[in-house]
Image (tube, rainbow, N blue to C red; front, side):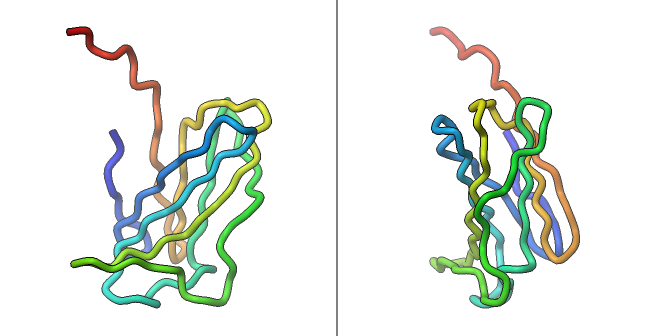
Length: 115
């Protein structure tokens, strides 16, 4: 299982969902010290599936702070959508924040244990 990793001075983690309708929807969670700390244009995401990079069809804008949620900590969130016409399972996501990239591998979890 992948864990948060450092990129661009923050901890980041991509979450992939909605994998069965010809698209991959995803979001990147970014730990921040305060709301407005990360601008939309400073985060990017690439997704690989079936040995190819998927075409990005939606992403955050470029000139506003990312939306955020706050509980005890503050997390900025960027939403992305990719074209995935073959419904291939994503194998890698690459988050770029403030010009620094980190890769997350999503492999086959293998067979589930049997009780």
